[in-house]
Length: 132
Image 1 (cartoon, helix red, strand yellow):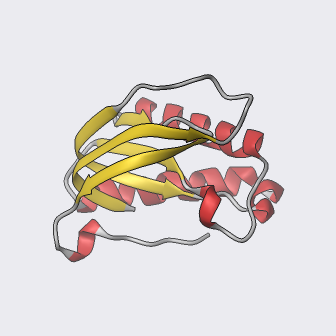
Image 2 (spheres, one colour):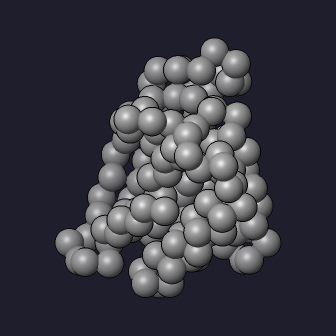
């Protein structure tokens, strides 16, 4: 996770043919950005993974005094990855649960490489890593 004063993106390269076309850019200010990667092993116990994901995102938001969270699938940089349908559904369920808990949620376009523009303050709570 990275707390960002400003996080902006523009879809650059579609990597999953079955995803809808997207050219919309967005900019979110004052948000925790969850750089989320689901591994193949996560498919064994999706409930545990979802629970820990939500818990960590809420914790990061509290530490940075924000109700704003961006969910960004980041699986293209890992050694193993879960099935795209699993990851898409995990993000959708997490998004809905966070909305139900009162958070403002954005989700970057799934199945795209994005041009990113990020401003993050230089403090320890602005960069958080969790693996589960």
